[in-house]
Length: 236
Image (cartoon, rainbow, N blue to C red; front, top):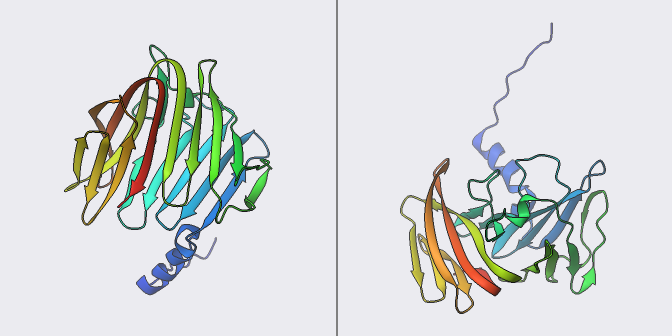
């Protein structure tokens, strides 16, 4: 028989342990973890204004969705989270097709303009504390996409030959204010906000979903475009 000892940390002990989590202990890094069994990898980028997770690689389960997985701000908390299956994944969807990020893709990763080799294991990317981290990858045979994690914003550029829809799964809490103005989508939470700044000619739509995560409800932001789309996520 195993002797069991019930231990419950005090609140100060819990707080001290949580404070050691990387995204709280440091406000600048680009950390990558790659699986040595399957060609899959996750990259975590921290800047003073935000923290993100970006996933890519081989498809090993039907429910997987890759690309931008999470966007969090130390001022207002989590504001975007991709969903598995078809509920509300982040990504680019061609007319009549599936979101590209629902399939496998292998991006080119650069840090400060230098290619970062994807290696099995866990490591901080050289230069990742200060330099822009960029993921670039094909959208099937119809176009290309780049996601740039800059010092104070996240920039996304899509080039696609045919009309397409860009999906952003936004997390809203009770009391959040979602507004759509010319070229701007804003989610205001308390005294802060996340802003999505759009290039010209983009049609914007908002869809409610039945997805709930704790205090959050998930809303799908749809950006309809053709040819090219650029948008920037930043905090104010």
